[in-house]
Length: 268
Image (cartoon, rainbow, N blue to C red; front, top):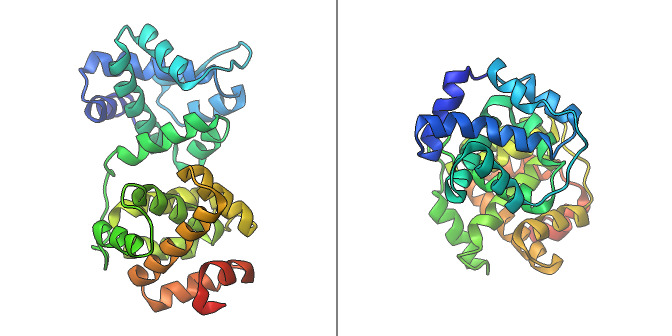
């Protein structure tokens, strides 16, 4: 758990805002969030936050339904800041919340929100620098990994989102132990998506039919199923280069035959 001063300092630094805006914005963001998620989920989040922030998640009214723009507008009004500052602060609060409550609880909260919120949350967390990362450099840099995707037909501007979507979905499908083994071997920028997938899988992996796997990638990348299939093949092939034969074989061994036949031609 982060202590209150640490939470506020994190928001201040990640949002690049004055301390007073960070403090007001932290509570305002949580207050508005509490109106958009279930009371039980708000209580679960509060239990993992500093005492001074728990009251910000207390809300006795009915669950409200409003979009992301209204979410940010309400934060701006309650924190007494303009709309651009409200989004800066809210993104910083989201990233700090992820650090404070852990990936599993954060994912539970995320799952209660509509698509536009989920994408915004993922972007906010992904943009925040890791607190620490002591893993050694990977065999491929992110640029080299993205180059491999380009060689397999993924457009450059789409490649980062494709890499993140496929690695997260794959980590959610396999066991946490195997996904953890991949982390030190992939580019640093892809370690966070792997950890998100591990949190979703809760150690054992989420049973997921191939079409559900591809549908998730399609949704995350605004693609159709055919493109999602090609994206998954490209990332899996680049992943093989990044992690080496042993770890790749261990990963493939955890996938059903339909995955191997569809995504890894040499295993078909």
